[in-house]
Image (cartoon, rainbow, N blue to C red; front, side, top):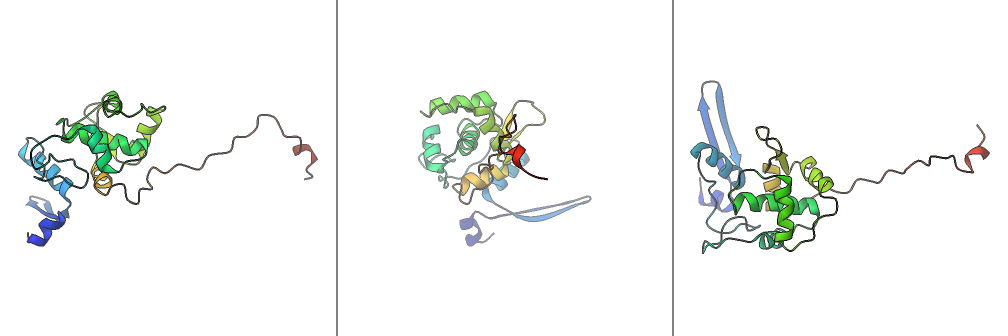
Amino acid sequence: MSDHDSVLGSYKLTLKGAGISIDRELDQPTAFAVLQVIMGGQRPTPAASGPVGTAPRASGQRLSVREMLEDSGAKTIPEKIVVIGCFLRDQEERTTFSRDENKARFRTAGEAIPRNFPRDFGKAVRAGWIAEDHENVGEFYVTRRGDDVVASGFAGNTSVSARPRRRRRSSSPSANDGDQND
């Protein structure tokens, strides 16, 4: 890997074996996740803080959930949910988290508890930023897409934009309905 590649955070993965031949470029979060699986140990992190501050600072000082939320640029509740997921993984070294653990970190960060947390948590899942662990029902993890959107500072985020509101049909016909000719 050239110095230029390491500056960009680009990593190359090559895996060859019986019936397998993989040769692809990976971003830094994905490369570290692969390394974690291979090494079977603690998730390695870069020495210096990334754009979101998910890694410990050079001094080794940990970040608070408040600092990570501020550094991330998260504005919507689903964005904050994925950042809190990153906090739980990167700062508390949790591989998975529950909805309640995520929700509790809003209070820890001095944030108001979301009024409709289940809806907002569902939006983060539908966006593909977090996913339920298929081996541990009720436990969630931050996905590669979640890492990517957090690393980008939520630039160009349209995955969780508000859906257009549906007009409700009135249960009784309006006064004008009877005046229309067929």
